[in-house]
Length: 535
Image 1 (spheres, helix red, strand yellow):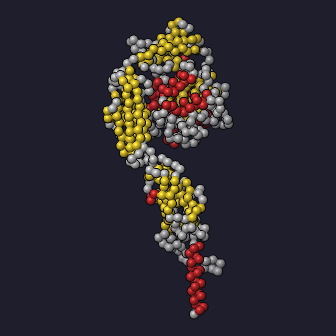
Image 2: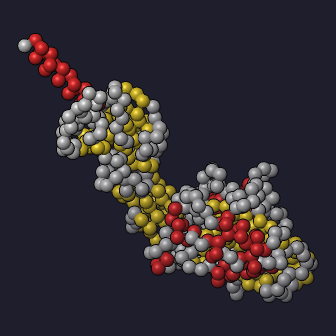
Image 3: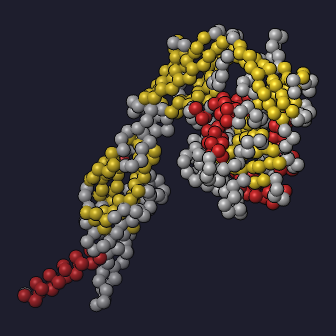
């Protein structure tokens, strides 16, 4: 009997040891596979014949049925208004340790003692946060990676004015204001609008308010919005309607040089994947049209962030280490190849496209004494901008405003620099483009192009050849353009008068927004332009 007891005890010991060492028949679900969207993984036991143990090898038993590993954030919630998160852990075995990582692949973190729950303070806010975890027991068995995500929304809805008066409106004219109200987190719950103290109907999404036959006065449109987590936000625009005019005189020195600087602002956000294909081919005829000019060309992105390829920094030319500016001194074929390759962006930049803002910053950086932008905008050269984007300006700061950018250029260069803004965009009203690859109407870019007599192209076009030719022709015309400080009023009582060296100049011209474009090249000399603008 004594020997029989030892045999039973030895059998139990061997069986327990085999259970602890079993790994071969445990199957953990991948954190990102199938419909397992909450990051759980489960233990799957497959029935199989159990071979007889050999002296060198113990049997490999499986964990009991029904066990499951779990990792949850805030009990599985998908949305929260706090960056202080409650994490819950359930292991597939008696875990002794856990390792928590930022991201979905368990590649970070350090091992710590296992707990059922813990609080975690996320360094991120107003974005989706993904965490992952692995468990380990005292025998150093490690589970597969589990992950879970939650959207932290601590801000009210975003309100962006896309179209609005950028200068004083003449009395009797109509006003159209377009704005959007969105909330990527909880969603918009309520939107309230008032114009001149009167409530106006508005809602989440894109709103268009039209006010006909404006009378003199100061007007404010105020928009407030609340999301479904009770976060609120508000924004307003104010503009003047006036029947009074101001008389101006502007002096422009015309020199015989043919200098033109062109800044190309390329949208490198994720929504531009379709347009980025064959971008080099789409713009291949640009340089042939401006051939013969003393030109400089540089590229920046619509990304406004203070990063290597953002905030108005010029993009390093592909294949030209340390160089940021193409010049007409380069052979035509080489210049076209380098330009096309540089425009073909592979990175994914910010979705908050801000072409007007980065143009402002690119000029500021050109005026500095360091960085790749230095000396790009030459004091005695005319200046053009070409924006290629499937979305509109996403913010409403001072440097996002077209009139503010025009004022900055005029003041910085003493009213001597002709300026034109061209855009290849989702043209407002082009429903076919917007419903396919044009992400959002480019209201502000269209407005800026009209203000400076620029060309407005179609970003959804399969071939940009025709519109790029028109833009290149517009760039040439800056050599015979005067950019005024405001759009002149031309009617039965008001006109634009030009003197050259003190004598009336009879050369034909057309007024396109703030630009006077002459039919023929301008002879060298001093020109004075007399005109009137709405105050």
